[in-house]
Length: 253
Image 1 (cartoon, rainbow, N blue to C red):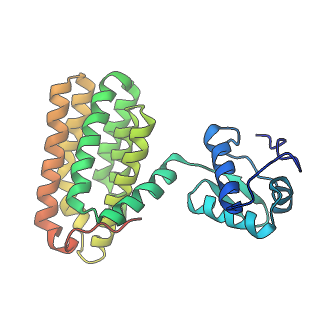
Image 2: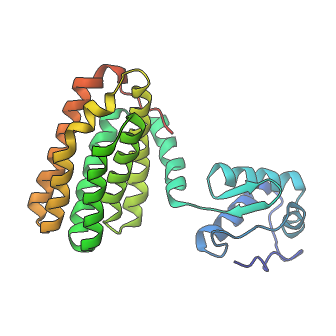
C-alpha cells in the first residue's frame, strides 16, 4: 500500500479542467489496484505539489471521490482508499433509480431474477457448510422478537443466499436491491405495527425449502423453491402493507 509514485514534478497535465484531471487520475489508480483499499493518500499539500494544482483543486477532487464512495476522509487521520464494491454499486444504481423513477415492482422483479441466478450458481459453488449456514439464517426468524430483529434476519438470509454464488458482481448488485427492500419495509413498519411478523413470519417454510433444495443440489427443485418464496412474499406484502407503499416509488438508501 505504497504511494511512492506521488513525487513532486512527476505528473504532467493539461491545464484545463484541473480538478477533473486529478479526479480521473486518482480514480484510475484506485480502480487499477495501484492504490489499494486501506491506502492512506498523501496530504493535500503533497498532492497539490504532485499534480501542480492548488489546494482547493485537490479538495474538489477528493470531495468527488468521497461522493463516489472511493475514498473516505477521516478527520485527524487523513484520506483513505475504501472503494467498497457495494458502496460503488449503490452510488451508481441510486442514480439510475432516481433518473428512471424505478418502482417497487421493478425492484422485486429484478430481485427474483438475481436470487434465481445466485441459487443456480450456488448448486455447484456452495459448500455443505455454507448451505448449513443458510439453513441457520432461515431459522433465526423464529427468535425474532420485534420488527428490527425480523429486518436484520431477512437481510442476513438474503445476503447469505447470494454470497453462496461466489459471484462478486452478483453480490454487489443484489446487496443494493436487498438494502433498498429492507429500507422500504423499515419505513412501512413505522406506520403498520408488526408488519414484519405478518410478512416475513409466515415465510419460514419457504425459506427452509430453499435451503433444502440447495442441499439436494437439484436445480429444478431450487428454481421452484425460490419462485414460490418470492410469489408468496408478494402476496403477503399486498395483503398486509400494499397501500402503504403509495405509488410504489423507491426511496433510495
